[in-house]
Image 1 (spheres, one colour):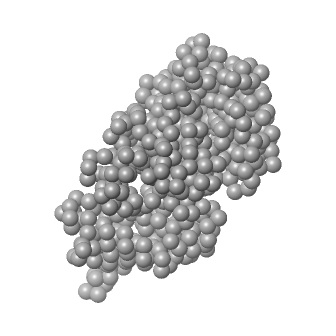
Image 2 (cartoon, rainbow, N blue to C red; image 1 turned 60 degrees about the vertical axis):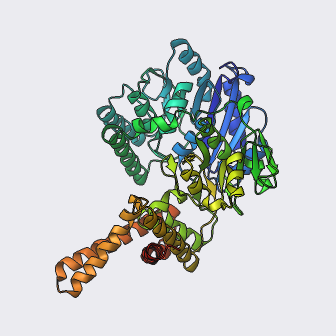
Image 3 (cartoon, rainbow, N blue to C red; image 1 turned 30 degrees about the vertical axis):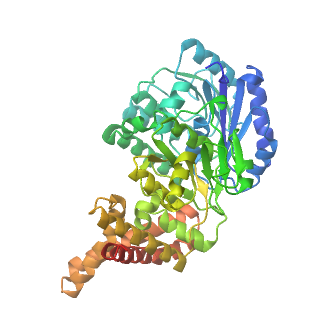
Length: 530
């Protein structure tokens, strides 16, 4: 613990290019008034900013300041989690970048948390000593939301949502890796899951809030999303017990201290090294000439998130882990046809078992992840290539030898998929043919539940058309109508996710074509696996 800084400050940000560097300096200066500079580590996470926020932050990097940027906006919760998992501090503080909340309170929070051995010291608008100036509509909505949380989660907390929190290293190592909410209810999920795992030492402390209307505003869609996320947290925690079941896989994934980090060799675009938040990194032309025990293999035209290596390295604490892979997201500046193809692949209807490759899912061990971007042990890769194994077949080859590949959603790589329509359908057909051959070889054991469920609506539509042809009009119309409703729903979600009606219009026929191509390829692979 002596080699850790006392405090890591996580600052999530989205599109604040004109003011972000100045705001970060204000935050660091206000905290340094109560702590020494050498006790503070700041991690600024650019959550898919599309202005020049990332460029300004990377240019301003210096001692004590780290920057993580990725190419798609995934939400504040995702940004906070990415920053916390990269943190080295004994304590971690979360503070908003807009300066609505005074960061000068953080040293007092840390001092109190250390003295009283707390799990959390959190800001509360309802503390009697808080100085709060913000709209009445937000006050009412906040009060109602907190009453709901008290009923659902039995939290002895009057205000879960203030963006000023300090929590212990134990929370970072044991709770943060389990979290799933990416956007509106992250604060609640953090506190609720921590309480369920026994971390209940929480103190609410006063805040100084000057609401400047510079951050997120209260919109009906945001309220609905927050309520949906809240219901999902309750369902996972109390019914599925998802968080409790995930702990076993993640126990070895705590952030590695800088002096203990292994050397990683980057094989691919050497320019990517400039954006990676990892100090022990060198660039190699090939696996054979690399010096690192771990290799970061980057495919052509792929752009990694700043925490790509940082998020993967802790999994290698487990000697059975040979490789770590991450989802490949479509960058915000992709072409219309590429974004439409991504909308299909990121949907449950069109993506099936491939969905997690193009949109963050849950951490797990995988055995069939194709692709040329991964972080892998050098010894395993050299053994595979000596046997003639192609990079796209490496994960499957590792699985046959009892070597594990971990899929982590806590980092990403940006790369556009094959665009609509013909390249996308051709790639779908090839993938399905491979899956069909695997299903035959394993006698159906390799068939994915996710893919089966994604094709269920198409099976319903085919059944409906058969019934229409045989005269059962009422039932046939109902089944076909259900399929149409599924396509329309997926189309609307695609348009909302990419904030483009044109993406939705292109994706609608692609859902049908994708399912047809998948079925054709799967049958072809199953019947003629050669």
